[in-house]
Length: 236
Image 1 (cartoon, rainbow, N blue to C red):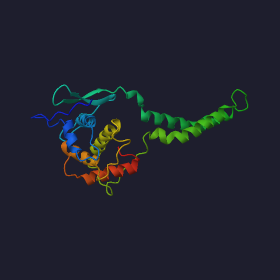
Image 2: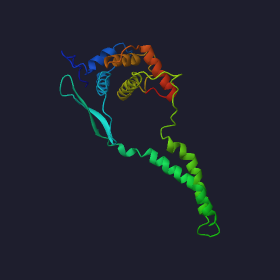
Image 3: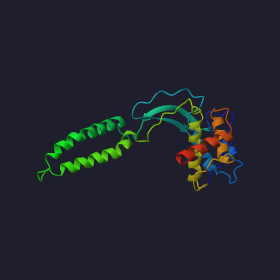
Image 4: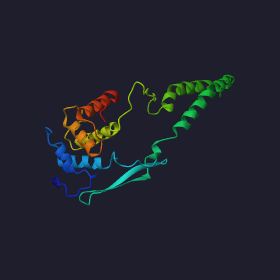
């Protein structure tokens, strides 16, 4: 049984978004958003950095940001951002060191081949040359992925392209929060498209406004999310 959403209490913290607010934003949806979806979206929004929040200090290696939310209070009490150890830090490696090592090895291949060529007469060492050749071919194929693990960065020409607006990335984050909640609670079988007439794009607009991002409209937000989907193959 789903728990009824409580009304917003008087004197609510302006930095606390409640499930009832999300429910109001999505009131015009063709299929009403369940309480669980509204609560999940509100919880995700309350973990975001707001436009009016002061800049956060730089993180050290092996750290990530986290803020606490005390749901025992009404409304939930939002804590300050804290630097905490990143337990998933082992999934990454020293990108530059790996690239430098691969380049050093590749640059050493000609000398290694010359050395191995003189050993091909002996049964025990005749395979050295072919093995070094295979290493060279593998390094040549993999070097772009070693140097650019996330794809090659192409510097933008700001004389031709405008800089991203401060609301661009928050809009993508909010769209992701909404998509995950709708799919998780089976309101949708897949992420919505966030077209300009969709309730999801309207909720993104409401959430951006609530978190302090001004001077934007639903059509502009929808166009940004649609362009991103076309470029990267997904909305969020």
